[in-house]
Image (cartoon, rainbow over all chains, first blue to last red; front, side, top):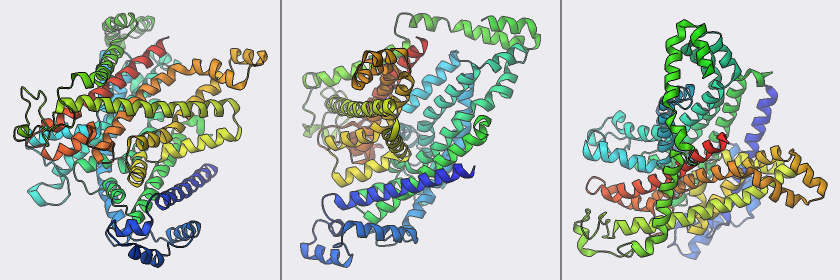
Amino acid sequence: MARFLLKHLLFLCITLAVVSFLVFMLTELTPGDVARKYLGAYATQEQVDLLSKRMGLDRPVLVRYVEYVGKILSGDLGTSTRFRVPVKDIIFDRLENTGLLALVSFLLIVPLSMALGIIAGMREGSLLDRFILLLSAVLASVPEFAIGVFLASIFVVTLRWLPGTATLRSGGGWSIAAQMALPVAVIVLFDLGYVVSMVRASMVDVMRQPYIRTAILKGMSFRQVVVGHAMRNAMINPVTIILLQINYLVTGVVVVESVFAYPGFGRMMLEASLYKDIALIEAGALVSVFIAVTTQILGDLAYMLLDPRIRS
Amino acid sequence: MGLESITQTTAPASATDALTASTTRRRRVPIPTLSHLGLSATTSVGLGIVAFWVAMALLAPLISPYPPNATDVIAVSHPEPSAPHWLGTDQLGRDILSRILWGARRVLTVAPIAVLSAAIVGTFLGLYAGYFRGAIDLVISRIADIMLSFPVIILYMIVLTLFGSSAINIILVIAITKAPIIARIVRGLTLELREREYVAAAKMRGESALYIMLVEILPNARGPLIVDMCLRMGYTTITIGVLGFLGIGLPPPDPDWGGMVKDTYGMMSVWPHMSLIPCAAISSLVVGFNLLAIGLRERALRD
């Protein structure tokens, strides 16, 4: 156990180091220097040179990278060039908003995908199975922005039941719940297709095992076999996949956030990239990689705890 | 079938369950008979959709009623579908049907190039790692781990805004992020296939490692690879659409399905057709690729 954690923490550190280095170099080596990105296209060369000197940008890249790492380790994420405030004041607010969206979606995806996946997989090849399989394939095929447009054309334009934006401000008279409804629906529908097909595949696999046949031959009812024997074992593989969805839910929902103008982390990263807000890009990249690798470790950990064959 | 008859005789309590199970089994029969023709229903529908869009892409210069970027000034005030513009016009008076057709041509040029480059690089790396093992294997596997854990959409945003989003940059960034993942799949297949007798026989004949990898191992790994390519074509189509929607995709003014949605999404409440049509186009193409992948995978499992 200790060895497992140590190994994964080491991998986490290495990944963070590699990514921080790559992102730092990317922003350094691409056309236009940092001071130019800070001041914009209309600043004079003199202004750019002055700022470069003041920010210490005339020193070698590697020296500045080491300095940058030191700052990060002491908890200083730098200052946003666009908003002129410390990065941590922006980033954690946005993460909180995205966290809310992710949590609600996650709480819907897990039971829905498990139920649909198990129902489909318990009788492989049945009509219901074919239907759920087809449905999940179609859902996973429609891009998030298209699901957003389809849902908005029904619920916003035609029925006028829900607002088309989710800015989380009280303007327009819509409650937070009404604002969240469409973004959550889009995320759940898009992600569901993939997760259902994974749960189904695992269930199909388990139902083919000899011990299921033994249970049937023993005279257990189909319900008892599914609930008592198959379900638990069919959950081992998908738990890892379901936990990995946290990664998508936190960092991958930039499209949904853009469709509904939701003030989340993904849209912050898109805007930071578009405005070349370097400190924000670097901090955001580190945060997203940290979340990604941590969820991976959680997934492995859950797998280990659930599967008795690996635990020993 | 034998299983159910046993359950019925030994366990009367579960007879209803077993009975429903066996009737659903019997009802299923027509589906496999269709698939005995060679193509399952899923495969044929998927293939049909993809073939339709490929034909549209190829024929775009011949059949599109207007040049893709030509504006019809009169149509701006009445952009709804009409006799001269079957699918209507967009906010600048450009014919949507023509832009959809030319957009198909664009996405079906960029996506296959991106997927093929990723597949070629990934296949070579995977064959090499799986066949020789050792340090190179470790390096490739670690890179794949990092790539898999990194949220790619954030990487795309950073890279494409820094380097500018052109078709070449989009192809490069997709190929670079996907190649290690394909390499990992090929590596797994190679590890299994390198232990086969025909590989041992080729080694005995004194064939070179390159020959064994390309002639003995690769053709036997093609099934899962083709399925993966199909799925990846679907994902890549989504990716290109998403990049267009975020405003960092294929550059305007040439039509790009995702970009068409981005430009007109704000006018949804007045003219929903402007964004609904490109959304339907991209969704149907991806459904086609995914159905094709499912069909091919089922076929591979049956054989």
